[in-house]
Structure formats: C-alpha cells, structure tokens
Image (tube, rainbow over all chains, first blue to last red; front, top):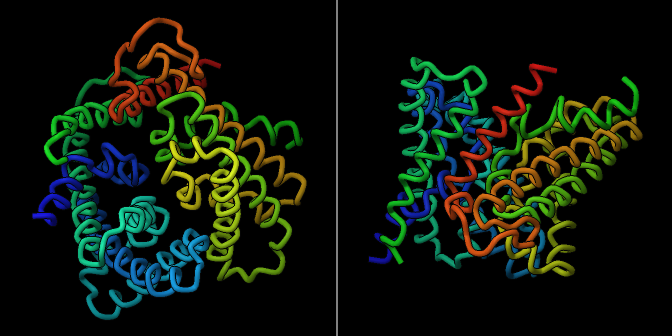
Length: 191
Length: 194
C-alpha cells in the first residue's frame, strides 16, 4: 500500500516537472518533437533510478558513518557526473542500438536538476533503499509522461497561428502553465 | 568590449533568464514571492562571482580534458558555503528555498559562464562578468517574484496593498509558467523594437 502511495503521489499528485519545477530545461528544450522527448524520457528513467540507488548507498554507508553530511552536494554531483559517463561507455559497448537511441541525451542529464533533486529528496524524506528506488523510478516516469504529453501538444501548436511575440518559448510556457493547472486536479488524491 | 558593457550585458541584452533561457528551474521554483526571488538571485550571484574568480585564476593549471568536472567541484564547494551560511544566518529563507539551494550546482548559468567566459578571460573581467550576470538573474527573479506576489496575494515584498488574496493560482505552480511566458514575450518585444 505504501509503495502504491509513493508511485501515484510522485507520478500524478506532485509531478516533478509541473508542480515541483525540477527538470524544466529539458522539458522546454527537447519537447519540440515527440520522438526526441521519448528518447530523453527513457534516458532519464534509466539514469535517475540508478543515480538514486548509488547516492542512497553512499549517503548511508559513507557520509553518515563518517559525519560528512555537509559534503552531500559535492559528492552527489560528482557521483552523478561519473555515473552518466560510465553508463554512456557501457551502453556504447553492450547495446549499440540503445546507445543510438539515448546517446545524445546522456551528457545533458548531468545538468538536469531532476536527477540531483530527486537524489537529495530521497535522503530528505528518509526513505529506505527500496522506497527510494520506487520514488525515483516513479518520479522519472512522471517526468517522461509530462514531457511526452507536452511535446504532443507542442507539435500541434506549431501549426497554429500564434501572435508574433508569443511564438516559440513564451507560448510553450503558457501551455505548460495550463497543463500544470490540469495536473492540479490530482491534488488531495494522496495524503 | 569595455568593462562597463561586460557588467551591463546581463541585465537586458543577454539576460540569463529572459533571453538565454538558462536556469529556469530555480526561476520558476523560488519566485512565489519577491523576497524569495531576490534571496535566490543573490545566493546565485555569490556562487557565480566566486566560481568565476577561482576558475579564471586556476584556468592555466587545469588540463583541458578534465576541466568540466573540475569546474563542477569548484562550483559545488561554493554552493556548500552558501548552503551552510544561509542555514546559520537566515534560516527562514533557507527553509522556503529548500531544495533549490543545493540545486544551484546544476544551474546552467553558473557552469555556462565558467565555460564560456571565466576559462578564457582575466580574473578582473571574470568577476565583473559574474557580478553582472548574477545581478541580471537576481533582477529577473525579483521581477517575476513581484509580479506573481502582486497578482496572487496583492502584496509586494510582503507589504499588503489590498486586503485578502487575489488570484491564488499565480502563487502556485501554473501561475509561474504563465507569468514567465508573458514576461519573455514582453522582453522579446522590447528587444526587437529597440
């Protein structure tokens, strides 16, 4: 039951992009086309889950026992950067088709604040390892869902007559606002 | 380019938020009020100035291949300094900014300026560039925060202008996107006509 609450809560109720404002840069940046947003979403699900798992282990088995909690930010960002690099190298060797699909998005993920944000949130919420991984995976799925919905809307938006000054990013942001408004309908579903 | 231009380009012409569209996450996440926006802007300015300064000092010693990880470590150290200082002296602001303080590390503006400017220029102009960009960012956040606070709770910097709340949605997540969208459209228009 608790895991179910975590899953629904992080996909719908407090969607990472639309209510928590994490990962806005890729959300605006790669949402022009449906196919790229699916690729980006896949890469984020993969890296975010893995990164949260590794940072959780480091927090509880290295930082806490040695009283190094203040090093959290530095250690986490280094771990994420190293992890992304490693995933890139391994994918290139093991599964070239997957690398072809996700490859271009991987370097961008290091600076995706959703990854560091979820890693820190998992620690702040005192989840155990399994809960943390569930939390990370469902947040990543929520990110992908928002990204795919949004890029679907933006593909249609390209064909519309939009006032000159509003073209491009401004209308995309207003659209995202309306999408966030729709997601507010889920508020209160999970306590 | 003169030093004065180095300093002022961050405000309108190359404003990190409105024109370059960098660092949108803290821009939207922390601007539910003008004070929060200003606080976040100043914290980022500090990190930007200090990291620009240190990076331009050590740029000749860092091998090209490992420069990005080295920059990240330098930036993360200053973020930790800001984080601990704010926790000690302004705990209420620290609480309301929450997660977004450690996330200054992944703010693209900071790494972007390090890579694009500080790694190629002298210490003096790097500091000025950091200060200009940082204050431009703070300016954008304060503007957005004031607009949202005004529309949402009819107050500005915490001073009530009218009784009661107006359109609460502007303080919540959707309002952030919508106000930023219209502000960018406005700046586009101003930049084009000038």
